[in-house]
Amino acid sequence: MNLDEERFRIFLEAAWPRPADIAEEIRREAVRDRVPVIRRSTEDILRVMLAAVKPEAILEVGTAVGFSSVFMCLHSDAHIVTVENYKKRIPEALRNFERAGITERVRLIEGDAAEVLPTLEKPFDLVFLDAAKGQYIRLLPDLIRLTAPGGILIADNILLDGEVTDSRYAGERRNRTIHRRMREFVEAVLKHPELETAILQAGDGLSVSVRKTEGLISGSSGFEKEKKWASEKENRSC
Ligand SMILES: C[S@@+](CC[C@H](N)C(=O)[O-])C[C@H]1O[C@@H](n2cnc3c(N)ncnc32)[C@H](O)[C@@H]1O
Image 1 (cartoon, rainbow, N blue to C red):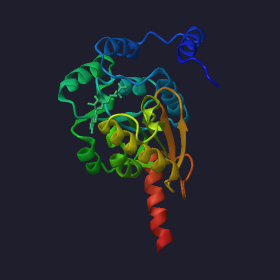
Image 2 (cartoon, protein in one colour):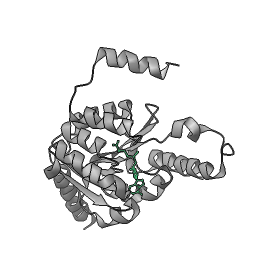
Image 3 (cartoon, rainbow, N blue to C red):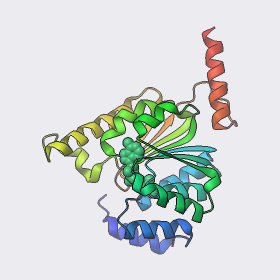
């Protein structure tokens, strides 16, 4: 199918106008100020995932000015830990959390995800990766560790405007490195034994993975699941 993206967007917006809420206001301001935010299709997939998973705890890597954190808070009851390393954006993100009335539910950690993630221990029901594209592969082991069994790991922009599928000799040298690393990431999430993954062409490309649930007891929260899973695993190895 070769459906024009713009026509698709117009069709969708006519079929379902977005609610005029605080998230929309923050999105509009971010777009005006050229701050990157998730695309509509990523928004839609997150919204559906949030409704299905009902996460209690979310980890986000790449806050920018907080649009996607606000969006995820508005569409769930979750608490969010979000990581950002660009100092200039942090005060604005914090202001946006206040405007949206979600300061109690969001903890913004300032720093490089490569340094912050190893310090986190509790697993999350949903992990959303939307940071520097060349770093995805390096962050992956910690992200998998931090995704609760049964939890979801979503990575945005994995197709890099389609360039990830180009020949490995195309483009500038710097971009070639980013493309190679992203290809490694895509292969890793598809082949990882603990993940079940789909690569979606929506927006700029998304990977959606479930961390497999060996020994999972249904009906428990993410943290409870991890505890039960860990203790069962311990018992099994006795
Ligand atoms: C695409 S923007 C995030 C957009 C945001 N998720 C939204 O939709 O509102 C990516 C952000 O990740 C941050 N970032 C990139 N690499 C990072 C890293 N290694 N650690 C923490 N933040 C990082 C950038 O500074 C940038 O603000």
